[in-house]
Length: 308
Image (cartoon, rainbow, N blue to C red; front, side):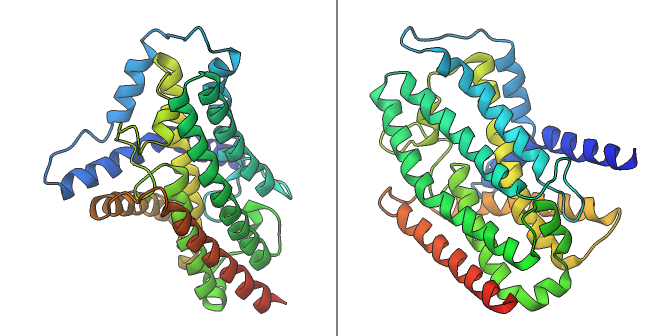
């Protein structure tokens, strides 16, 4: 019963707190710009307002367009059940669950791209094309980084991977883990459409990637998309924070405290990055992803050599 309550707390804390991270990012950007900024709970207010509105559908769209927000939200919520909180076990854990984790994120992107194409708009098709291009470079980085963690822990389960990561692991494989964190941070920015890859606040036709694919959504459907995006931010952030705080080798009550602090630090870091950097041109984004791929491959090679 205690384990069941712990799993429920982990899951619901993520479901409730995920939109708050976007508020922290936006407030950090506002402070750097010398502004007061929107409230930390602004996304909650936006979603509540959208849930009360009606929905408008184009005559050219099919059931794919209507089902995509629900499927995407379901996929990322499934991914949340597979992600442990530090050394605590995930609500759903089994050997090979990391494969399902990667495919859940891939399914979320797939239905979003499919819905954008379903509108019949060349504008949204342009965004879908860019999304697929960058995802083809981002997904190998994520897979290789996770494979390196599997090699270090000797288990194909996310729960077992983070349970095996201690201060001793950092002492033995510290340089490789730093490379993995750096590679995953790039993927975190790419997958969540953040600067320097994409600007979530822009509506310039030539620079939009993710936002252009959801322009035709309104009402509750748009609320589902915004919520799913915040959950994706939380899930990928959890992956990074779990690696980072494993160095502290905490147990018991201190673990969720360190995890919460780590997520807030990550949100502030993203806000700082978006405040001091400009958006890269589309031609330079593949170079950034190739750099992250090199980091992941180097980390995998280092861990494979050390553990062999």
